[in-house]
Length: 145
Image (cartoon, rainbow, N blue to C red; front, side):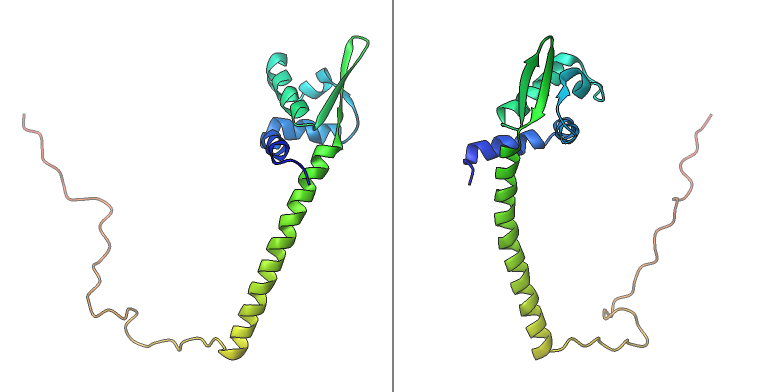
């Protein structure tokens, strides 16, 4: 399983919608930086900061081809994150299955029965219920001339 610090970087990188959009775009194949930046309403330097975060997390690899910088998805970091999530998915699935078995057993031992509806008062309290407040109060003070 991956190093904890690397997983922190991966999940932090994926916590931003812009960076997730870049990852989604790169699932279609490599793309130039300008193609990746185009759908996002931000300056190129601002977009480059997002790419740097993705690259430092090991999610994206940049390569210069002539005058064009192309980016490609690096799946290893995503695979590590997926393995980490799968581990905890198994844990929580087992916990929820155990809870389901316990609740099923409880239903067998002590079946749930609905209480019969009471006639008469709606409340078990003997106190009187106040009427709801009026939408507006009484007239306010008048201004003297």
